[in-house]
Amino acid sequence: MDVYKALKTYFGYDEFKEGQEKLIKAVLEGKDALGIMPTGGGKSLCYQLPAIFLDGITLVISPLISLMKDQIDSLNEIGIPGTFINSSIDDKDLNLRLQDIRKGKYKIIYIAPERLNTYSFTSLISNIEISMIAIDEAHCISQWGHDFRPSYTEIPKFINSLPSRPIVGAYTATATKLIVEEIEQLLELKKPIKSIIGFDRPNLFYQVVKVSDKIQYVIDNLNNNFKDQSGIIYCATRKAVESVAEKLNSQGFKAVAYHGGMNSNLRQKNQDDFIFNNVQIIVATNAFGMGIDKPDVRFVIHYNMPQNMEAYYQEAGRAGRDGEPSYCTILYSPSDIVKQKLLIQNSTFSEQRENNLYENLQYLVDYCNTNDCLRNMILEYFGEISKESNCNNCGNCLNKSEMVDITLESQKILSCIFRVQERYGMTIIIQILRGSKNKKVLNLSLDNVSTYGIMKEYSENTLREIIMTLISMGYIQITADKFPVLKLTNKSGLVLKGLEKVFHKKDLLETKASHSKKFDKKDLPECFDEELYEKLRKLRYILSQEKSIAPFMIFHDSTIKEMASYFPQNKENMLNIKGVGQKKFESYGDAFLEIILEHCNK
Ligand code: ADP
Ligand code: MG
Ligand code: ZN
Image (cartoon, rainbow, N blue to C red; front, side):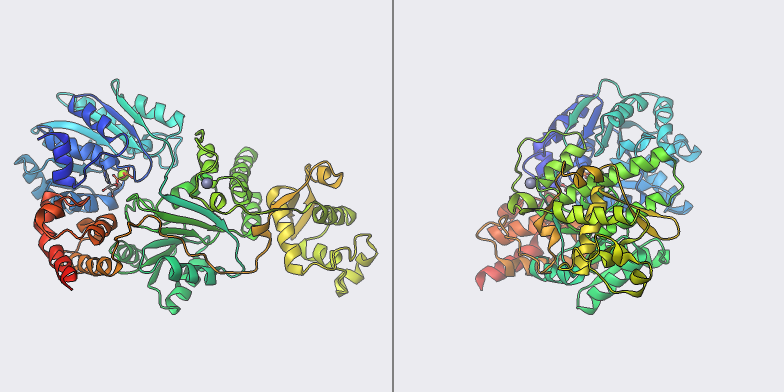
């Protein structure tokens, strides 16, 4: 059997994804491999497929214990025998597995890095042949990444202790140059064949929207675009998580919450319900996501601003692992940025760290305010040079917002802050500008200030929005001693003197409607039959419940979509559907054929 045949027979795919073939061939020629591919790029297949061909066992080192069971279940579903060893299994179970490994029952073993140099494992290893060691999430070896795992640094010691050195492959989605170099060095890779694919996730649609009523927007958006489709809503606080989840449930959606303050059993249950499609939506803090491999997340909404670009890329990146079109939305509000700035300011970090945090936050603020291609902004952040100026698949490329000049408004506000000697907070400044007769304003004789009443025609809300926008852009500083005070910055003078103009996206300044647009479903073939699709999805769900595995382990959404577009009515045609391999056909083919035939007859 050649690799193409194996790809079809086991995985049900006709073609490799970018980079896969090169890495697989390297391994089969006995060479080390280094694969840098974005999330959803198909890294697992790069070591799972060669494992079928290698004589001995392929050992997969993975930090994500929670994922191992899913990965092994998926492998067994396609007829590749595997097992895993980590702290979630008890001693009795462990001994059974070790026995089976000795008997040669498995081709692939997943193992947590902490286990490698334990006695029970090293003594097992001395009796079996290991052909390959695949190191998944290889960036965990680097102290510079955010997921550093000390036990990863023990991997070279383990490899060197083996009687003969197996092929070593390292795989990650983290592509900063420094980290890639470190991976190669620290893992002592030997002239690895490399495949480095950039950060772009072409199937993700990015947008930033500003709405007056966020929850209403989410509800509309779910109804318009994501009926019964899985998605994640990220919120900044536990309180917001609870409240959004509750509101969605009261509107008839199936949503669960996930945050660090919850009972861990309940949290685990909610996560499982999400992965098994028992619920549609998970509302979560940024505690959620590490070790989630759910391929069919169709939308990620940031109800509040993420912390920085790197976090955003990770969180939004949990959408669309399966390569199907998916949507990433930030619900922009300048007050979130102000809150984050205050948090940084009130922290006890060193000045350098603080500046770093500000800088990172500022990039995200610029992302929200720009009128340029959002995809390119993301790629540039990671040091990638974008190929085109227009990606045609982001909110800005599809719908250029008008830019409005708010220099005059900014000047009025800045000079008001100047006139009162930078002594007051936002509320008072707004009251002065609007000429308020508030007692406090009058008692302090602020009605004598020359900027009193010069912005009467603006509503309080609008002024608040503009001021927060100016803070987010760095024209005003907010400092908190006892209470937050507005001060000028070194950029303010330029605006006051008319040397610099301030522009703002019209879409972000006006917050009239909360409606959500319907996305056009350009991705579906014309012959797609939605009714059949729903029937097949229902069947998949029932089968998954019977077998206690996640629905995506039976067939991916894209596979079911193809079935509902090309109506395969016999084994041969069924095997032509992307994602239907030999073993999957044996397990599920007849059940799906039956529904398709019945539907077609009707
Ligand atoms: P990564 O680990 O790089 O984030 P995965 O290995 O989890 O990505 O794969 C992402 C998805 O892509 C999975 O759903 C997998 O089944 C699918 N996939 C992998 N290789 C192919 C291929 N050659 N053709 C189509 N789909 C593929
Ligand atoms: Mg992976
Ligand atoms: Zn774009």
